[in-house]
Length: 106
Image 1: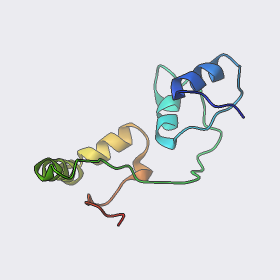
Image 2: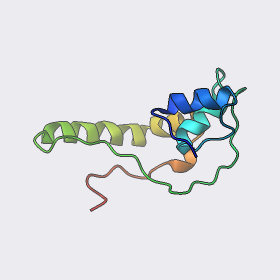
Image 3: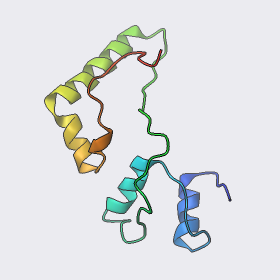
């Protein structure tokens, strides 16, 4: 197994046949296989996700107003349907969250 500094470095190795496979986060991998510019170079070997996880946005504790603004914006995206449209456009709608929360992992 080899490691690389960046995801881009690993992708170059894959495209130039210096490696035959690589592990990548699911969402960026789905983008690669669906994007018009890259889909001819890559395909998913599996859609199995080993550790499906949510993504988070982090705001400094001293910025509660910013936290509330981000919460409101994300909630609006979810309620308006824009969030679902974006996920669908990027082919990752199966990872959708049902609600936006603060510190829900505690």
